[in-house]
Length: 465
Picture 1 (cartoon, rainbow, N blue to C red):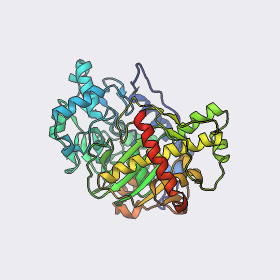
Picture 2: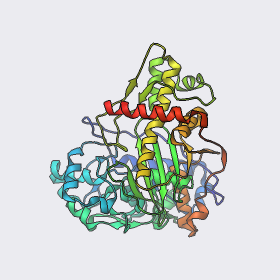
Picture 3: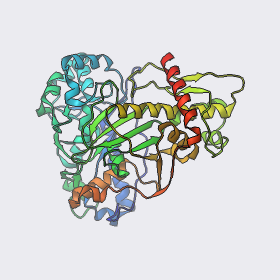
Picture 4: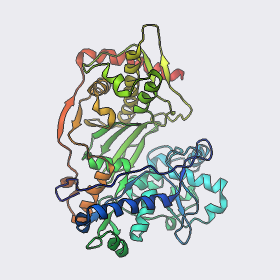
């Protein structure tokens, strides 16, 4: 990215193997991450040598929550246990019992996704490995260690471990002790905008860089995605319609989740926090339907037209992969309710799109219950290309949705912006600007009552699942 925040070059991505030895398990070899980093930057050096020579700052982002445990030689003791691994469900109750007031420290209840419960699982099931642990790092921070030689994490990513005190923005001795750990096994904490170290000289030479660039603290993928869209002010947020659906809202104070299973985390910029809720199946529900109806997702959506519609009377619950947020129920599943002879392909397509919107509305209601006011939402992700789907979402949330112009708004772009701030010492708000808009879609007053009634039916259907 250049000084005007224009994309100069990018290296293509490719999938990395995930191992699932047992139901609910999800692991990855950390060596794969480093190999991919080398492959990407080698390609950039080969194809864009002049631009690479001028690099001043590097930002880091990556998957959150993964437990990467290292020995005293900084070598991984085992494959990393990833964010979507659910084996540590019993350890969630163990952690809650060990720290009855954990809500005060970390703002939410434990889930199998967080790093802390993974370490409790290791303590119980792999004591030899657990006892050999010298350092625990998150995935991108393991990459940072190899890039810089520094053991550092940023507050946005680290707060997902459940070991960071949200109010103090520092490690919590209470939470670490509950897992049998202490701060000597943790990386140093910095803000996402701060310098965490410099690229090793031998790597700078390998990639043709004139000087050793600074490496910013960075952030997890969702916090960096928010930096890419300029979502840093209280009440600003994004709603993403991708394979999963994500509601992300910035806060100026930490907000406790209460009984809801929503994320309450530090943001990647100082003195900011954020809330996040994930609907595991969003556009993937439409992909599932398309396989049954033998038509592409695009064809199904196009058949509905572009004109805003009232809610359909057919109900679809989108929990094909279970539900982690705002209700924590890994066993719940989805389905159609009220299906009758008159419901054709179009009715089922609308019901699926509407059901995803209702699941996101449930997330929004949990945010509001914590005291968060949703002021403006930026619609992103592949599903946001459908004006009809955004209309359903606007009617369901009773909010206007902004549509950004351009596509370079993801986590990598946000990480590059954090690299720019670290390299130039710029004021974060001057760099993390919101994107230009190509339009907005608001609620249709004539349809609001139908969506309210349909949402009430949806809640009844969910209760019966």
